[in-house]
Length: 310
Image 1 (cartoon, rainbow, N blue to C red):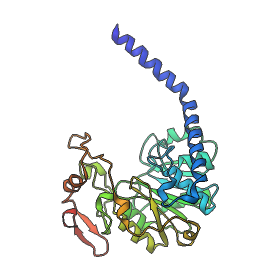
Image 2 (image 1 turned 45 degrees about the horizontal axis):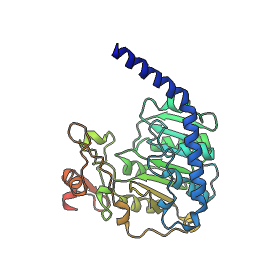
Image 3 (image 1 turned 90 degrees about the vertical axis):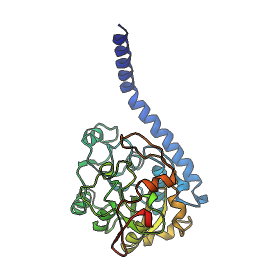
Image 4 (image 1 turned 120 degrees about the vertical axis):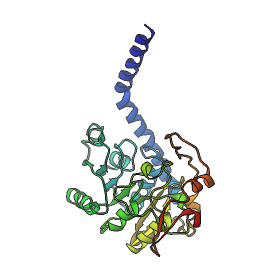
């Protein structure tokens, strides 16, 4: 009888949550919109890019940062390609689609991406195109070409693959793309330009149980993207997403130019896993030690090294 009552209560709560979800989503957007507008009023006082942070749908504060960048460069209705968009519930492009009417090409391997995007409240308000695909250096330009075919121009490209990001970005044709958001691995430090060796089948938790071994250092991305005509603008405050803009747009921003990368790799999030997949909450030195012997490619020299000899 007790189990039957629990089942009834659980089902009732599910139904109630389903009925209230549109109102909850609308309230979330309205609160986010209000926060963005308040942040915009203070933008002349920003010292660093992360001062623009506002979290609505993004994992950290990327919603506010991207809106600030769009406002500064004068892109009122951007066209976006987001690689690693999850299921479009927590990502970098959703607020832009809802607030600025952005067209978005969503790319991820999640099987629920398509149905979640189609069933979202904003699917009909602009072009929201879900694309379930495993992204590699060999097909990145095909994906960019889809975005250009659908939208005419891509203003913003966001890449969050938790793995082969450096190699994908190295192969990418970035012509005419103004803004890049790239996830980097702060554990790899601020000095050396290092990345995991290229592996087009790389999976973060298969490579190392801790989930700490993936991607590339911030310095590796700064060097790579400078060679492609971009300037490093800053990061989110937590220190895992870096923002780059075309050289000719830098003069529009009054925030300080990043010089020392050390402040952008102060990674305090303790999201490591143990061998059973449970959170292990490792601190800074322990994080380095547990993946200290994993291979890293030093980009300028082509040598294989590891964190133990960085």
